Length: 98
Image (tube, rainbow, N blue to C red; front, side, top):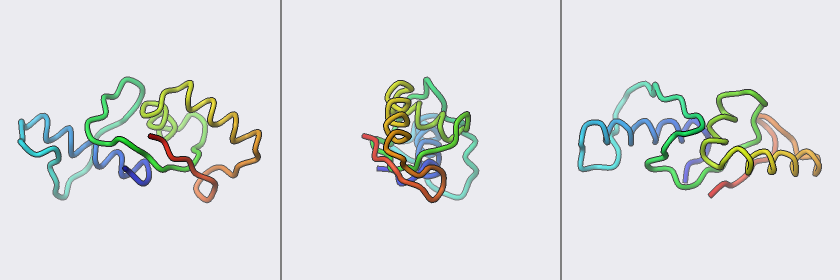
């Protein structure tokens, strides 16, 4: 379970590095910069759940959420959130995606 999109990127980057190095461990830790851009088509290696807020349209954060949950599922959740008058952005409501 990742709490936030930054954690998703960090974990998925560590999992990708482990996979590329043929490491027996699922993750390679350490101080590094995540160069991973997660968008539709990304194969998630380690993250199975995500707690995140509702992100701005056309943002890379929204693209990551769509890659994780599916574009149509995310659009349906956003439609429900707008109808229910949820708060958006950094200090708004959040959703649990599994």
